[in-house]
Amino acid sequence: MEETNISKIRVQLTNRRERLRHAISHHGAPVQYITLLKEVDTALERIDNHTYGVCDVCHDPIEDDRLMVDPLICVCLDHLNEAQRRSLEEDLDLAHKIQKTMLPSKNLELDGWDFYYHYEPAGAVSGDYCDIISDGKSTYFLLGDVSGKGIAASMLMSHIHALFHSMIPLKLKVDRLVAQINRLMCESSPSSHYTTLLCIKAERDGKIEICNAGHLPLLVSKNSSLLKFDSTGMPLGLFCSADYTVSYSMLEKGDYFVLYSDGLTEATSNEEEYGVERLSKVISENDGLTSKELTEIILIDVYEFLSGSPKRDDLTIMVIKKR
Ligand SMILES: [Zn+2]
Image (cartoon, rainbow, N blue to C red; front, top):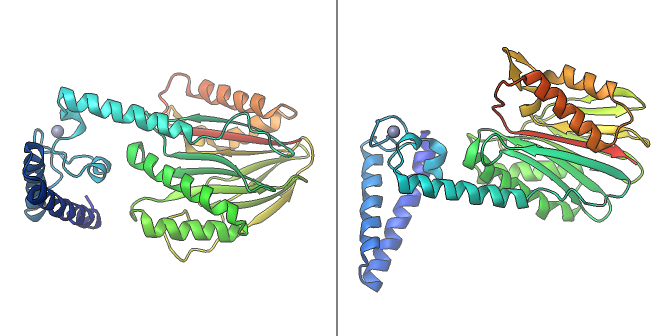
């Protein structure tokens, strides 16, 4: 585990020790407090003698993201006892339910746009961020991919979700909005994690503003030809002072734009990646469909490509069509 994360855990544990001592001195000493205090002391001792984060059973490192969530755990995922396994399953199930509530409703009525999306976590929870937010006048389509997987990535994803929902009503310009959220993320999340993001602001008349922060290219099907909008900025959460630029396009009735995560284009079968080229071909060959139909055709194509090979990453696709 990184030194900075260990320092954070040390601060957290020292804090907890103080709280426990305070509680014990004020409310007597219930058994569970004493047990917890012992566990905290042991964890702090382990940090001091550099044995922190090692599984009691197999002596392999315990998963970092689990320690960040619960710094008192002493075994790796493979060596949980029955009760711990059950409680982990309950946590994951709850996290899955919470994450589902953060997805945009598929029945949203948008001014001038027809949309559909497919959101498929690799495990119980996803590190992909998929959102549609209106500021009353314009609509924002957001698709992000948090580095890493599992619970830690899903927690960061919910953080980004909250940031966009609180910042979009402020009606900043798109480059300012993304720069501001980048700054807030740099201040509040571990430097080991970052997020690639596509932020598209769409107007009723068909104008779109595109900010691509380290994400895969946005594909725009305009008058039946396909345009690519590559990344022009750093992923969020890496550099506080990063600048972002915005590109524009004007879409007419029937034009699309397609956002996706690397779970789509990096889906691998026989050591070959699905890739942006194949995706572009599917989009070009299937002009004139609804957003839902196009999403489904892309999914059928990627599953055909995988032909039974396991899908290893979170997969998200969002298709938006000008009405
Ligand atoms: Zn173990």
